[in-house]
Amino acid sequence: MTARDDLEDRLDDLEDLLGDEHEPDPLPITEEEEEHLREIFAAVDRPEPEQLYDEDGELTREAKHYLDAAFDTEPET
Image (cartoon, rainbow, N blue to C red; front, side):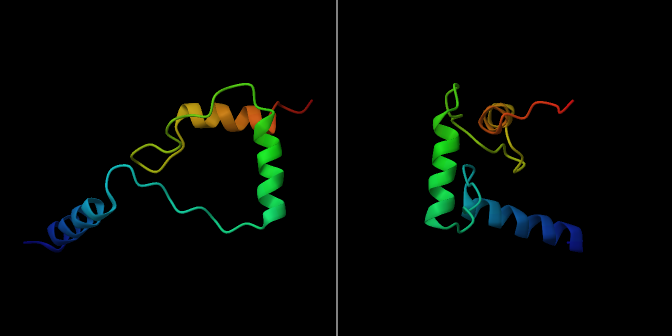
């Protein structure tokens, strides 16, 4: 067994432990920050996506659109 094979086996073991639906733990935020975020997302006119991250740990397309709507990211002119 090569070192690469060993690393791939260990990675597979870790993925098995975490499961397929694992999302990163949220960062610790203050109550004021949490309330501010709730206010921002309350005004979004699209449903919250069912899945925020894909299997590669990247934001899904729906999550990106949701965040764009929440933070009103239009190009500045």
